[in-house]
Amino acid sequence: MEFSDLIRTGRAQAKLLRGPEAPPLRGTLCLTGHHLLLSPGPQATSELWLLLLRSVDSIEKRVASDSGTITLRCKDLRVLQLEIEGVEASLDIARSIEALSSLESVITSFPFFYRPKGLRLGDAWHFHPPERYYKRVARETNAWRLSEVNEDFSVCPSYPRAVIVPRSVDDGALARSARFRQGGRFPVLSYHHAPSGTVLVRSSQPLTGPQKRRCAEDEELLRAVLAGARPGARGFIVDTRSSQAAKQARMTGGGTEAKAAYPGWKRLHRPLERGQPLQESFVRLVEACGDLQQSTDSWLRRLEGCCWLAHVKEALSAACLAAQGMEREGACILVHGAEGTDSTLLVTSLAQLILDPLSRTMAGFQELVEREWIQAGHPFQLRCAHSAFSHARPKHEAPTFLLFLDCVWQLGRQFPLSLEFGEGLLLALFEHAYASPFGTFLCNSEKERCLCEVRTRTHSLWSGLNQPKEQRKLRNPLYAPNPLAIWPSVELQSLRLWQGLFLRWIRPPEPSEVAWEKVWQIVTDKEKTKLSQPTVSASEPQL
Image (cartoon, rainbow, N blue to C red; front, top):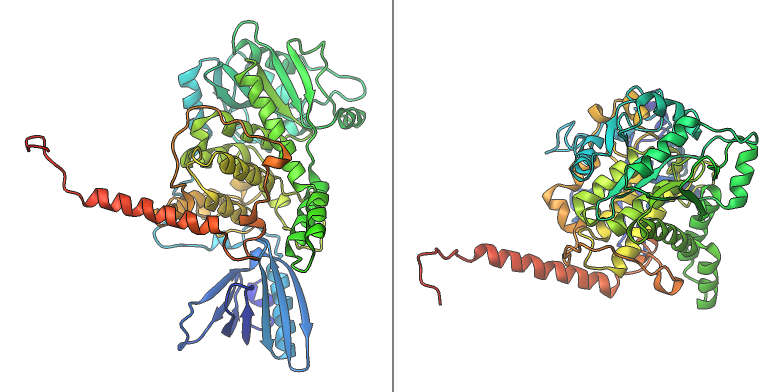
């Protein structure tokens, strides 16, 4: 089907209302296959307004005698209102937006058509391959190797082609272990903690089932994890399900690692919410933030009732548990829930931010997101199909990645000098995960991205974010490298609502945001002064 077949009316006169802080725009509204445009006209001072249709989460329409109003609720939490001349034109445009914003085909999405100036196809896709992180691990220990057992994605469809595994375990054993784990997600290295010599490993649940099945190769793999750390090393299995949920999973073919089969490993349950309950929490929080007429008591009750900050607390607590096990107990850590593609990645990525100074740099954090979320198989297309406004509530949607970004923001707020990136990068990742002109967050796995030729036919988000003009919006001007672990307070009194995301379209900039811009200006002026000062040669006398 051609895009033109879905566009009933391509042009109309309209007024755009963008919120309490932005003046309205009047002009000609145009609809294309991927965008909604408003041109204010040749005499206006405003620039062309552009909206990616994929970012529309829900549409509401109302008509009067000779006009119509369309309310667009966007995945980045903006609420836009279009007042359009003509009832028929209003209804046609609303139906067209509904159809174009919900196309399911990946290869017809805008990233396959986006060709920005200054960027070349293929740039930045090679920035963060698994081989790059393996080289870092290989400099620290020889106990691990890079395996291409999954080169054709037949062993595990959600893993990348190459994974890091214990050197003493061959590919045949890995394949047999994969058949014992849900979705084929056998244990692989997530992070090597050089100071203690311990490792962070992730997987999915074992398929023990009600018959309490065992797998010799899987047991060998986890023995090799401990043997590669240091003599006498022990391990903790951090299960992100409750003990009751794990028992129920065993009745349907899943389960947990038996103590007798995995000596040296101890299981700890740290249940994290996932799926629909997490999505509902997000929806209730956004609804509470959008109600400007409520009393203070009502706001506080709704904020507590949505449980979003409780989810932030639990995620950070589980990450701290994993990090403490490595740093203070000298233990290896295996993290898994059921599928190993959601809360597992949340814990492993946050634990690395706590422990690893390199993950807190701009390049290191980008690599962390690429390695621990995108390449590790978080199903972005399923989880981020809708945001908080959609009337549909599919079971596969969940803001797990947004929860990760919120936890990172909490770390940055508690340790304002320790992250090289600022809130701007976290907001950009949130927006691009839900709707983006770049191909980085497309599909659900590396296998799907290969089938759709995402790497050769779309641009990488990292190439766009690493442009010099973008860096000022993303970097932390106060950054000072911190070689130590950063241990956040996870008490609810220490956690804050992320106003920069949940309230950014509703209220004017906070004094802290204005101060942040001032800090940037001071830093920029200081750098310019340094560059403009003449250098003094060694032979010249100095006072």
